[in-house]
Length: 477
Image 1 (tube, rainbow, N blue to C red):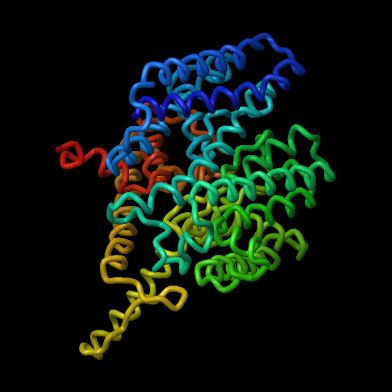
Image 2 (image 1 turned 180 degrees about the horizontal axis):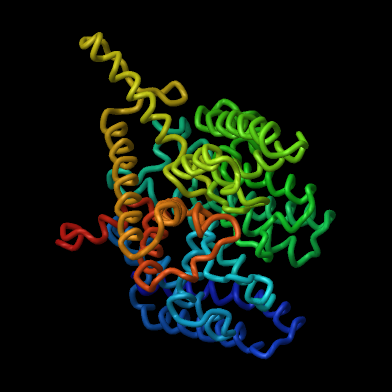
């Protein structure tokens, strides 16, 4: 059953590769065969797996199968997704090709390409497309798979946490997924049109739209959005906010013609962080760095939104700001967007639960007999739910620390080590140090790149699912 699922995934991936071919033939290069050949190999492999496992059609998939499929799928699609980079000689070796592909499909946005403009256009389009595919996949993963895997820390969408139930969305989950995909596609097309009306051509508009809605951050320019006009930066900022929202709530708001999303506590906290932190940074930039109020707030809002949604676009090198400002951005990398979004990170609702529980624990010390439940959207969270989410935050921070220490041992400076660790684990891509805005991961040793790829995968599949897959108990009958 697992092989059959992987076959269908490869078939879909190969079809997406075929959509890049018009750009390949419009911009002939020395290695114009790379995309057609990659598509052919991917499609054939997918067909072979489907035909070879046709006898397993209709078999029931268990929770253990679901975890296995989810975790392995990212590796399989990245393995075949690396072929265009290798065949076009855009990357020098397999590790770099796999790094770029996995970074795309996990919507991390970390790149090993030092000079992006030198890469063929069809390869850059495929690069953005990997993020767009990954963004769609993580939404399905969050909505249709996680709630049915009865494993601690993995249920992003249980009703006690976000105040909605599936029957409110649609009686059949598959229809809900299709509707959310429709919103995902609509936002992508709308952003493409708006960017095309600005200073981007159609190619740049499509690439940046796919990288924005997926919270990926791959750009067609080494300077990222700093290479484009203020108009384009504002448009991208708006759609980065949308990509960081709970797509289920967006669907409810659009379907019921109501303001469901505005009543959601997680969304309100998400907006509060954006506005409050951006205004604070903007004021400091105005009085210390810039003389222009407009430039200060534009850079502040764009940087905060990009980091908080784990997109990773940039318009300026924020590591050149006063140190306490980029430290604030560094801390935001641990938060992430809303649950059910294409963003990475810990997710906003877990921080809400953690902060509430910490405050209530102090009250319980003073009033030991008081019943003080943690509430989100007016609904009490079970003790088990609070425990799972606080444990997740602890494990997340522990993995970040271990990753940073290992990078320090292999020769990275302190800022680069902690910046790369949180950027990979949080699927931000752009960190601090040498991997800050405009930086590249190409100079990292081989061990570091594979370590960072592990962190990307851990951050994308919600930590506990991959940790569970690696445990001995998971494989016992």
